[in-house]
Image (cartoon, rainbow, N blue to C red):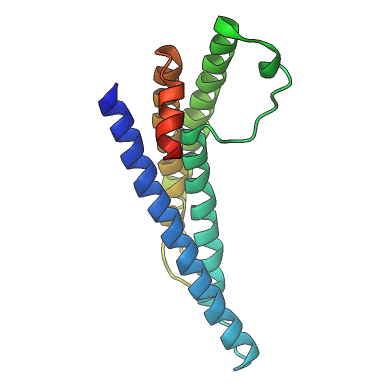
Length: 168
């Protein structure tokens, strides 16, 4: 169990850094865009496209991180009313549904759309659209891994242990 928590912590750390770096890059590129548009009167189409794709990447990767930490928004009107084994079963079913959605839509569908768009090239950056879409199966795979880790934590009653380690 300890090794799974170390793995989760390492994955959290790497994903947090990637999201932070993407955000920092977006700030720099956004500032460049503002300067070129307002001071020089020549907007940069490359920076506009780069910001759009960076934002998409950051949103999807950070959503995987949030699912991994089980900090995502939820409607707790049913789950908050039950306790004990029933609540654990409900949470495991919820994680299984998330896993299924991530595996089918994001992982399988993401790979399909990625393959389909490898011949299309972005307007300003000149890179294949399939490269841009790699974030879909990547974040889907991360959500699947996190869901499996969450199910293991729920099944072995180590959710409290994980919560206390992620707060440190």
